[in-house]
Image 1 (tube, rainbow, N blue to C red):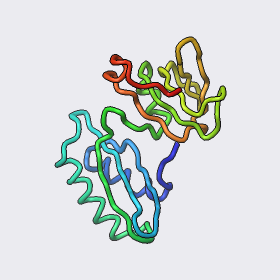
Image 2: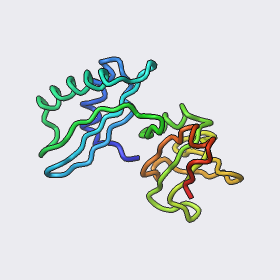
Image 3: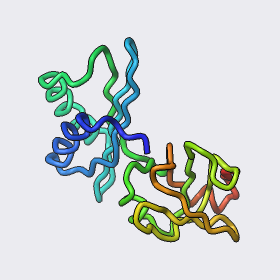
Image 4: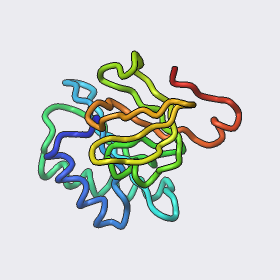
Length: 161
């Protein structure tokens, strides 16, 4: 799963959690002139713009002091949204029974994208039910994963085929 480098995670997660939020995940896309550091936060009560501002302010200060990123970048703090991205195996466990869209580094069963319901997590493998087919997808094989919101499923919305 595409998560930011470990040194950024080790710096950012404790700050976010210290403010009382869950650090859902961190994306880092480096670029010499317009890099992007995106932090997804959540809480039991949901996330408002004020929450994002509070976390952004705290992180800006820490990032300025520690200076872990070379070059310019934009800092973005966001809620994960209805189609929340997954960064950790524990997130699949938490959403067993939900449907996810998974992109793969290499094809499994000739497919690079799979939309399936999470049946279970066994070790480092996620079991996805896609119609009649049960697929065993290694966590390390996933390049991206996102929750498929219920409203898209009930309206016949999304397919990963």
